[in-house]
Length: 263
Image (cartoon, rainbow, N blue to C red; front, side, top):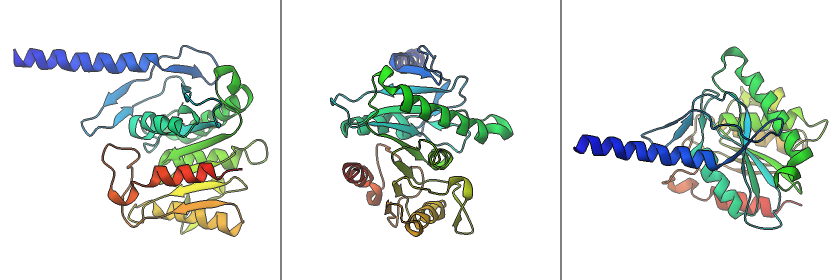
């Protein structure tokens, strides 16, 4: 009986998760409604993982504050193999909503073989352009449009910022413990900062700390505004987990101050 009850409870929980996922407004990168939720696995570690993205899409989370201050496109991390959709996605959207920003979480393609990163940057560029050109149609603010990414999502955010610099780049970039941005301490060309103000946050004991450090140094060299934070401890991938390492608990407050300071 206990086993049956446990199974029923699990199915109920999964049903609830599915219902919540179905309630999210999800649009294709062509701006069409009705995209179904991607396959997601709830991990015992508290991290929900999107394992593949059949249809690249934006999940929309408008803020209750009117007028909104702008829209932030959030790119969850996951090494381009999964998307860590809750602590680097949904929880972040809720926090940014509290700051007065609309949020669009980018479901970009992952685990797609050798072409994965090129498919992901194509998704990011298409999504950013959609928000810039048609955001108002979807109830989102176009006053300011920024990008934010975690780990691999930070790499994607930096890359789309660089790729759009000659056209219509995001108004700001938020790189949370970004990965893959440097080699031998030098920022890579495909992600090099051009003119977009940035917020970079990484713990010194994160193995990807050199990426954030190199990006911030490149900003300083080019006189691009960069709010750089590098606490000693915190590791990698903390996002907005229920329990944050003490030294990185301040990142939402630091980010809010950066956003408040934007012109």
